[in-house]
Structure formats: structure tokens, C-alpha cells
Length: 172
Image (tube, rainbow, N blue to C red; front, top):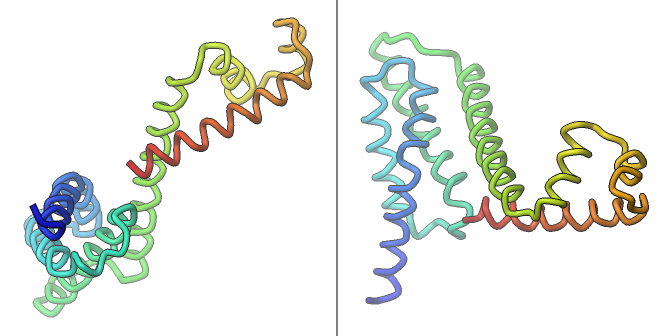
């Protein structure tokens, strides 16, 4: 299989993987369901035609959202000319931004949950105590008979481990 064919297959895989998410995004911008599939299909066509413009596979999601946003705006403009009433552009921009933010937040939250589950029990307990229960390190150090300095170093190490794990999960 040629390199071009491999890239095309990877691209098709990315499009397929993000279909439901992109459809939800478009649905959040178009109040009537009848146009969502049309815009999604146009978005897929544009993405396929412009697939060689995608610089990095890791930026596919943002790139696809931008194309979906512009296809949605084009659809709305056409419908406005036909007399259909839609939201004002600034409101539409706010909705789009909020949707993208919520989607990213959900992905980051899922990545954090996954990475926390991978931690050893003692590390997870320290993180839980410190961030969820807002416990003091001094009291916790006394409870587990450990120095506060050691706990601080453990927190730094755990945060570094979580950061790397989350970045890998988001990239994947």
C-alpha cells in the first residue's frame, strides 16, 4: 500500500471517528434537524477535498470543527435568503465557542479519569485527599507517618505523571 493510500485510510478513520461529535456540534448551531445531515455531508466533502491541507493529524478535531462551522454559516445564510429565521451571527459564534469548549472539557475530563485510574493506590489516595477533600498535607503526613516534604515531592511527581498521561490520551 502506498503512503498516499495509508494517509487516505487514516483520514477516513478520523472522519468516521468524529462523525457523531461533529453532527452534535452542527446540531447545536442549526435549530432545525432537516439541515443537519446536509451540512454534515457538505462538511465531509470539504474535509475530503482539503485533506492534504491538514498539517498534523493531532489538529484534525479543531480543523474539522472549523470546516463544520463555516459550512453551517453558509447553510444559514442560504436559508436566511429564503426567509428562514436563525440566530444572529454573534449568538451563533457564542454557541459554537461554548460547544467546542465543552467538548474539549469533556475529553480532558475523560483523560484525567483514565489517568487517575492508572495511578497506584497510594498516589491516587494522595491526589484525592489533596484536591477533592481539600485536606491539609500536614495532617495527612501525620496520618500516614510521612514527612510533609516527601508528600510535596510526591504531589509534584504525580502531577507530572498525570500531565504526561493526559497529553497522550488527548493526542490519541
